[in-house]
Length: 379
Image (cartoon, rainbow, N blue to C red; front, side, top):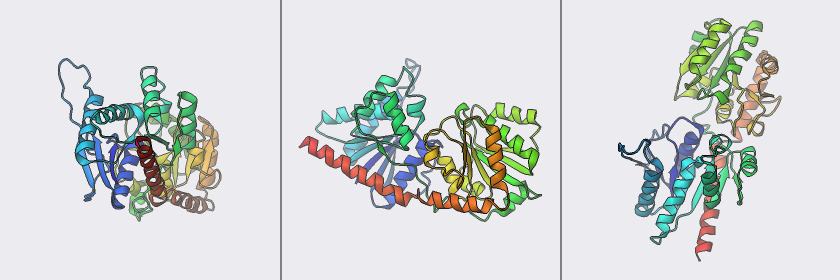
């Protein structure tokens, strides 16, 4: 099958999932065409079945904001027509689903019919999509898609509750490539950070308010009073400066390191003892799954899709959003020498359920279903 994948090329979850999905499909013999404005961050290998099509748009003085959606739709038309694609799979509703609808109509006027699948990832529904500026277009674009998937049952339900959706949403969870995300021998790195055998906690995110990084630091401050521990904060974003200031207020600067953006995060996770995700909202919790694959148990909030991933009391613990005392209590329990090995083993076992080889066939089956249905409608 020839598949066009439209995504954001950044470190964000939707771009990561779309890129890894495309790479997995290519490995199974499908021809995959990425359509986006930059080469995706994780598209870092050569494969005869992978192609990249850059969306270019001109900056004119007339336009305060470049018309990316128009340029994207035009590029989709071009790629579908000349690469003879069988299906378009767009990740993140805004603006990819609406651009795909526009492209589909243009192609239909030329006698070319292309089915479109939209995958919802989270903030395209829970945050941005709810904005009155976008809601009518998001609703229309989802309803006009030939197939719709969501990365968790919670996200699918919120989509139904928030928008006037008249079609079925297939739940296909996020996945992990266990050949990449696995525990690696990097103990020399841990010894450099934790020379006295301290436990190593970690948080990775894009440093936005919804991630509640202040709760990571506040919880760590409680834990630090009772046991030797260090904290690594991986990522960057609008909240970073405020978090650095907060560490100074707590007098934690000697025990907290800001590492910025890292591509090979699996090497870092391999030496950590506990992953912290106290988010206000998570559609799935891909970063937590990556940690679990590296045998790192999780302390998280109990919001969004996290209860579909974290097994309470086995792979970690979930607490109410903002309950730092409970998170700290659970963290201290996991970090006890007699408990930590059991949580690490259970975390890996749970992550194995989301191995890409288990999830990829679900996408392939959905592709076949939507392609068949589209052909029936045309007939």
